[in-house]
Length: 314
Image 1 (cartoon, one colour):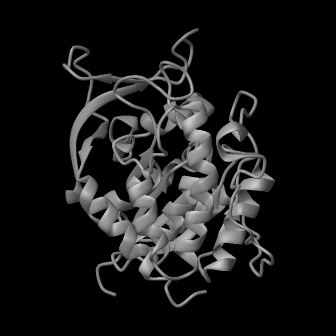
Image 2 (cartoon, rainbow, N blue to C red; image 1 turned 180 degrees about the vertical axis):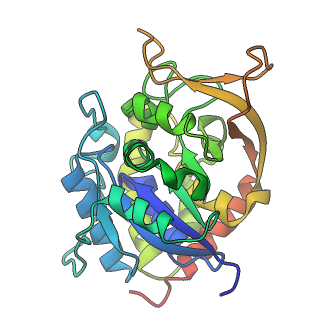
């Protein structure tokens, strides 16, 4: 289809990453040219296996490339309390017919951008930014070729893994700092927006009525995710990562505003915080388009339509 937006989707596949993959793979506005995987929600062997299982079950043809096994400078701190020991508890996958592509994720990102036209490929990053940071440091020539980096991470106010920091940024603040200062166009979709897209019982029941394997996987995964979020966060699960796909496919769902954003890498209590200069007091260049709100009803309609694209797969 003419005009489809080419994307590379970078994931650390847990529950909401899986929803992002489902939304991206068959969206008529998008061409998913590859999925790159990093450690984050769980260790890389688990996030990779989760990605391959999902793609196999839904006949998603995009190649899957394994990437970084740990953050740049610190130890990996996964989130088994939220996503479980597998990183994707709930769905049952009996077989997997898909193998990881041989090329490392970082090299796939670099080669894809160097072999494309400038401003042709958008990178959608919904996990820690380690793969992206490594790519721009290893080959800076890709930076002016990136159409946009759309990332799930950070917030204007507050965090979810610490009082100050959101999980993806906190997992590798140094990588996030590299990405935010690399010069590529960035859209940050943070907790301020994603936590308004909550899956309550009514929404889950509506999704369960959609036929096909995608809705079935979603429903099974959300049973675990809901229980974990209610226990550890005190609210229904948010569709964090799928918001990025919704933004790329249909930007008018979101209201955004450009700000200068810095990543705190040294603070004792604030490491991993996205410091958003809301008033312009620093007089520094605006380096990120920050999402402020989303049309929640339109988002849910888009997600339901995504599930319907897989209705023939049982």
